[in-house]
Image 1: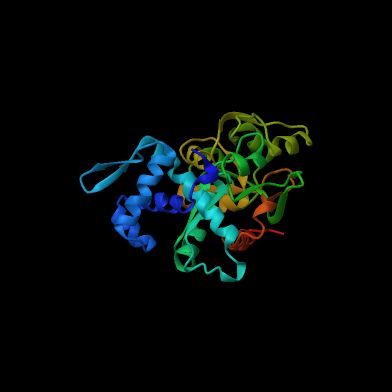
Image 2 (image 1 turned 90 degrees about the vertical axis):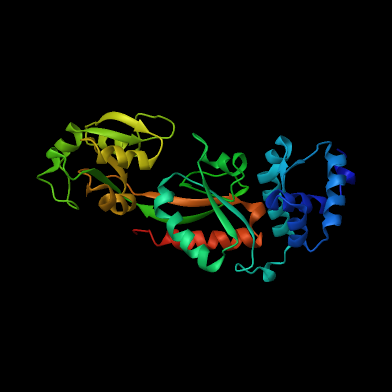
Length: 309
């Protein structure tokens, strides 16, 4: 393919056919005749050296190559549209596109339900996607996963990234309500240091580490805990605690959110542990992208409601 001579309008037509599975419906979406779409498809087949679609009944089924570029093509067209759209013309009610958030599954509980409700009323054409973080180097999530924003613990950042402080989170201990070792403790109160150290723990660690912030804080009082299991997702930590006598140290906002659904008690840790600051990061190149800018503001507003300070 000679990209220098490729008519970029053909890519809009390819995207429409991929979404509709029909040249007729693609033409209706774009305001083109069926013959114009078919002619464009023939040009695309020649330019890309691939059949792109095969007919199956009344549907056009994408080839493996066409299917492999479907999501990436949609994302790049969204970015190009954002680049060329004047900021004052952005209307969230009419906007179409995807916004990708890279974060831990903590935000599946604390962000996505509220964001989903907000978008359904204010921007129904925008799809929000939650994807994982790159282990060991969260900043790389922006490039590797083509994320529009990443939600991470505060850290040093390269100069090409912008940041926005979102909320501080303290930590709470969770245990199942029927755990006999916790029967003398009232949910919301403080757990004893002896109980915290005697019971075995589930540790949230996407990388499989055997220690975290809580262990460093515990070491300052000359104690350590017993880690029986590590899990890469908070949902797994909460589920495991709810079905065993293991306990876990998790962000307080999450502990309060899941306690009822998982039948858990939550407690203040028996030692001092500094609250974590969660921030949002994004490429400076996306500062003026109208859709990304609007979506960032929606995420920021929802997340700042969680701040404890």
